[in-house]
Image (tube, rainbow, N blue to C red; front, side):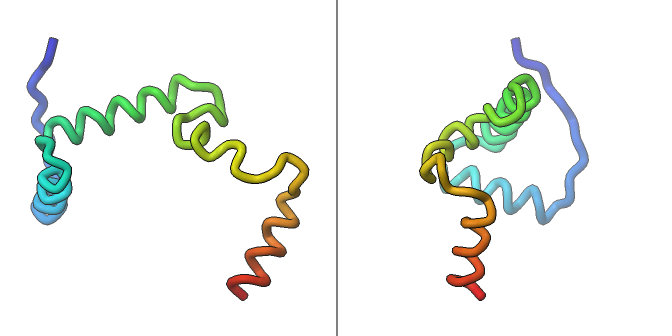
Length: 78
């Protein structure tokens, strides 16, 4: 069941969101609904299991430390 919701949002933000949705060939309502669904999934999941974190897990070998990553970034980006 769907319900109508009225919210107040800055005009420029609405226009930007409409352009974003249009480029993806979805309605603004679909865009907002998808975002809200994502928020509810992230809130309900234990820390570290959000979909974006699941996609990123396993990119680095398990024996790489945070300090090693920081050293790499410092060397690469100054």
